[in-house]
Image (tube, rainbow, N blue to C red; front, top):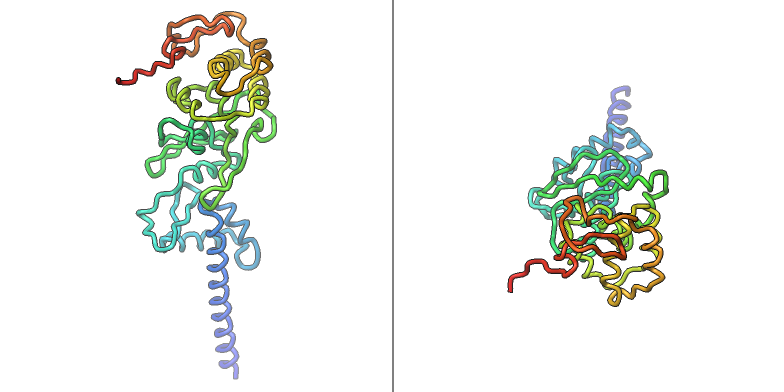
Amino acid sequence: MVGGIFAKLHQNTHYNYVFWFISTTVRSSDFFSTHPVFTREEYLAAHGHGRERSPRTADSLLTRHLSAGHLLHVRRGLYAVVPSGTPAENFRVDPFLVASKLTPDATVAYHAALQFRGKAYSVWHRFAVLTWAHLRTVSFQDNEFVRAQPPKALQGLPDIGGGIVSEAYAGGAVRVTTLERTLVDVFDVPDLGGGWEEIWRSLEMVEYFELDAVIAYALELGSALTTARLGFFLEQHQERLFVEDRHLAPLREHAPKQPRYLDKTREQGRLVKSWNLVVPERVINRAWGEVA
């Protein structure tokens, strides 16, 4: 009799385990279908009841899925889902999804934001990630993700100063700066925009900017040099972008009081008096050395 009771108990325990394993696998599959790239914390939050409350159990499940080729390990605490039927070693993870998950406030920015929107002149494999958090450079699948520190003027402001949206993309979501913020940001840190030729050629692919938002964000940064760079570009493209004097006037008020070079290389050029900016002839004429 006693042996029969223990046998029945063992049988019930086995069935309970099988039921638990199947249910967790189903729930994991549901989670994977809506989270093409995800963090360990997101997985734990989605499996936060019953026997899966233990982080050790969740880690064990993640390890099983990794071994089965259902997941790729991007970096510590970050995973990508491998589509069914695709060998893990052949799967290329979308870099924009990766960039958006590297820190809690990670945001695709600068040249990477233009590339995300199809407005970059050149395709890069180096992605600027705007974040207040500490982030070392991450290399994954021939792509490099580098931290872009937000301007000091935005310290303490919510959502890294605004001008950031979350857009549905490739089965997940990407946090990315708006075109209006990106326009100002690349003039604020031109190295992250790819240099003047890349910046000019990329921005000239954009048909429209909400200029009131552009001006408001530029003035919030409080940089005279950034303001002058932006003002010069808008003035140069005044007709195409429907730039009015009311847009340029507040920028002129905050332009440098003394002449400044366009960038730190101090490349010689012509003084554009309205902006107190020394601009290289190649930028003024948009002469990028094209071969005839």
